[in-house]
Amino acid sequence: MKNIELLVLDMAGTTIDEDNVVYKTLTNAVNEHGYSVGLDKVLVSCAGMEKLEAITSLLKEINGNETDAQPIFENFSEKLKEAYQNLEVKPINGTENFLLHMKAQNKKVVLNTGYTYAIARQLLDKLQWKENVHFDALITADDVSESRPSPEMIRLAMKKFNITEPEKVLKAGDSVIDIEEGKNAGCGLTIAVLSGAQNREELEKAQPDYILNTISEAENIL
Image 1 (cartoon, rainbow, N blue to C red):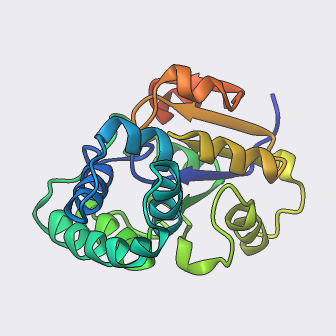
Image 2: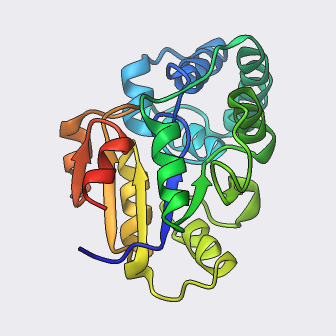
């Protein structure tokens, strides 16, 4: 099996169970602006993307007004902060042990997300996950100029830990965009998980190396 030294793991839906609150909140924010979209459409169109970009491309798809994207995004960000304050956030089954086992094998674990740093931090604080215990670094949409599926976040993670060969990197996520990001970076392994936003049929379109129920099942592969 490939010698994986770095795992780049998406957050919501991949390592963290937040009950799709992001996409529910995004749906509400769009609809409050006078549109009418369902959660299913939002999950297919927006999963894994940086959220302003997601809203813009969703508006494009429904022939909305793209200038509405910024005010919708601001409304969404406020609503999400609030939702997260009240939300019970938990790790997806088996994730915590999986992270600790990977760290025990001296693999580097980077959490990456299309969220802002503030929102990602809020999630980690709720879980009480600590840097250097559960993960080695957090990379968010705020750290890069190009959002997923650009490989910029993965390249930044590699640079942080002096890993020059992308074959030694595993990328896992719950959306097509995550898998595309991994492929664009040339990752040795791309793993899609069914614990989040998109279903098997959607995920198969991106042709990941594996589709697993949860990320902890990756332990059998590694």
